[in-house]
Image 1: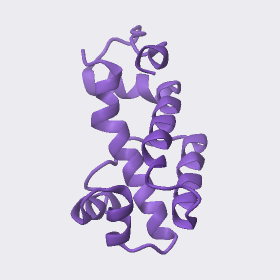
Image 2: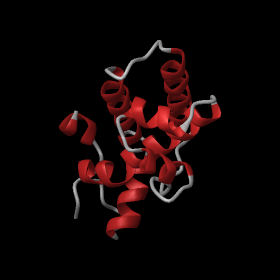
Image 3: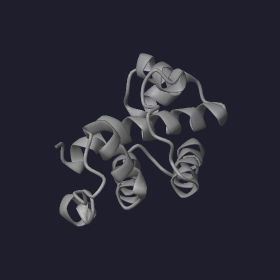
Length: 126
């Protein structure tokens, strides 16, 4: 069984980046600008936008709102590249407190339905 933090690295962070890249594109940024802002390659941005990478999770409305606000703040310059780590971590922590992590863990790791390994993981991985 993979720990919740490993599930975050493999599935949650790529999905956050994908949704963030899509929002920045909607706000009129070019792929090259997005790649420089997020410190990832332009081909990675292209894969995120085209759902070839980071598309395995459907975030709820609250998480989507966090990502949209973050994108707008980045576009307007009220958030900087220094904020990317802290805001991404904040989003991941929120995801870990939602049912999303349990669903993902059970789907990807074939975990029994009565598993509670993810419960309380925010305090452990903080």
